Image (cartoon, rainbow over all chains, first blue to last red; front, side, top):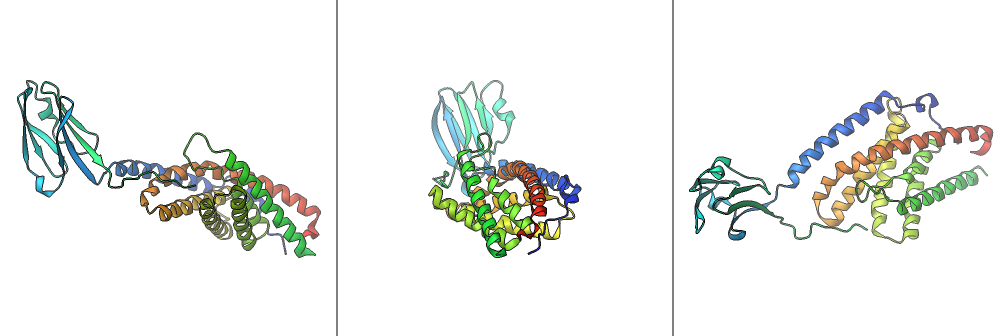
Length: 139
Length: 173
């Protein structure tokens, strides 16, 4: 058996190939981290939670039957008209003075909220993960 | 006689790998991600690959995984460890054999670390039936860049010193 220890001149320091390899790995992984961060919050079952004065009064799960549906919310605090789109939701009418909720437009991502403070209305998109057990044990 | 010396040397390498694996399992990387390890025992495989050849490195890797399972007693980690060792050994061999003009030992070691991670995440996916675990891969890969770099550096020094010793006792193998 002959010793096959490689060329030691090569082993001395970081070669150009190494540097390129490291750069490529860093770039690819940082990019994919960003992509994954977006994809990880794309829940399968998004739903709209409509809360008035802290209490959830309506829960709408997105599907094709509710697209374009308009939901009036009339409470003791005021009136809002909510429109459901394809995976998104907005307020189209409100009787509050500043109409900030109307100006905000559509929200579509999990965690986004529309708040109408005068009417004590909060519209929030929540995610219900399809898998009940996200945690796994690997030991 | 030569065969016995070779056998003893390989056994010593397995034992070193075992020791490193044990020390490593007591010393988790505290700051980054759970499951990220230093990959010290990868060093042994890399050294074997360079000083001996592919078959021996594979044997050392597999033996090390098996014995480490016996020592730590966690059978599930056998699959992770075994798949990681085999794939990283294969990758390092290919890179070392065909691309050693381009990559130094550090590059080879980084490739090995990445292959190790990939195999482990793949096995975790299969075992848990959940492909979302792949979202964990970039974090592990970025970690393995650093660990792979240092494993490569260490192996480089080790191989350099081994070469000096082997020059003195050239009849050894």
